[in-house]
Length: 128
Image 1 (tube, rainbow, N blue to C red):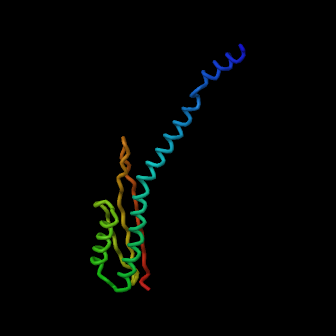
Image 2: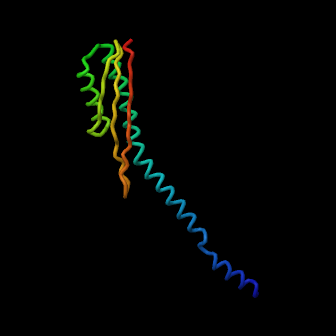
Image 3: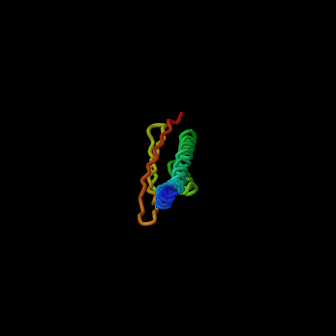
């Protein structure tokens, strides 16, 4: 009988010993979910702008549109895709080919820090 009492006291002392690992796992999982929730919408907006830029440049090169018209379409699409207002759109022609470079920075806000994530979209359409 004495042996059971000793084993029982030992078991009581170890109760809850695994809680720290579980709490650490939950904290890491919450941080990953938080980062995904912040970065995925920015990435999706960037991809949508790239696809739209390819279409706009292709149309502009085929129809031989003025650079101002293509730039206006790119700026409108940038507004629709949620790009920051301080984006830069550069257009140039190389014969029939039309090329564009769109640069911007997204401000990613964390609780105690703001990160400026730079992006650059380069698109070139041969105009064929």
